[in-house]
Image (spheres, rainbow, N blue to C red):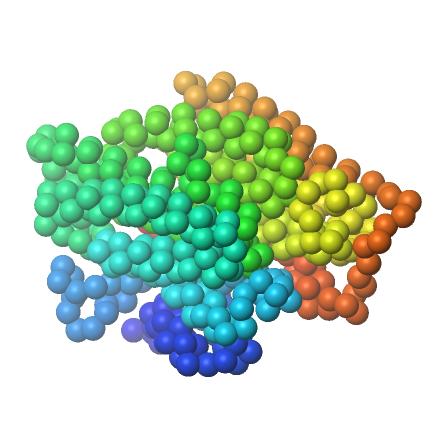
Length: 497
């Protein structure tokens, strides 16, 4: 076994141990440990990605000395390693971008807890990406849920406590459905390792037995993960959770947490159930309908908002709808478009939350649009970055959002029955996106004759400005170098199958 094949396991364990160590450190020391850890895990993930690309194959890492079907496994291919690398980059930039606000938003004696939670959250995300065992996946789903809830409520204001309670209730409902479906599937197959489950499911379908229990198990797991990833109409917890948590928490929650659940669903579709079997259950038609509804109603809710952070949060409902619309198309290219949109949305949404805090800081801390008038002149870096993010979300060429919508349109024209509704809703959603994002851009660039709000310069926010530049570069890279990334996604999905 090549030594690089140890890197996925090492990455997960490093995050877990860093969380334990951070619990005994002061806030500043815990912050440095967290930053160093993220850099190390990013390097390990990059090495794993390069290794899988060079070999052209995925590999299995056996945990301990017990092989399948009794032992636990980690499985890494191009898609898993690429997603792990992307998650690490987004988390690093999100934490650095909101670092200047953390001491103001979190009590000093609780800062170390914040980094304990982020370390546990990253470990759970990496485990969801790499694990080849469904029970292990469920355990880390719960770790992810608890960590995310802690990141919401660590900012001690009334709305965050309410948001955390609502998030926990909905997440536990989703977890319960996932566990119930997993138990039923285990009862049918007798296995927990994904590859063994897939063989047993194929045998059950071939024999024509237990079709209804199998469909019920698949539906329960799918609905559970849909609830946890805030697919419409299960999104009621999302606006407050994203809108009132710390800025880094909002960026991480919107960009990574829900995407971890969606990536797990992709693994279930390909490596537990089988792509063709999943399509034949017709569950994809339900995902398609709710995805389209999320695209419309999420955008309409964003238009009605007068709070910039809640507007961005409601926009996430629409973007999650895009991803599930791609699933609902029931084609390989629809899944490719959805996976690319996971990357695009993660890069853009975290950018928007980090840029928005720069605009509110020079507007007396107010998040109301009327107070944000001219804020892009008072904080030029945040203004430019928010504009880039807005153009990406609308789908302007050069940015990642344009490629996402192009991929969805190309996928839609290949399906006779779903082409027309997909293209119509895609067009309507794009218009609605333009309404609320361009309205905000016009507002922040509307000059004001006199203002008592101070302006900031690069010297006042060096690290913040550097993070914004990296976010812009990442978005443009996804926009102008999309074909190699799409090829990697297709290669990774082929390894899944």
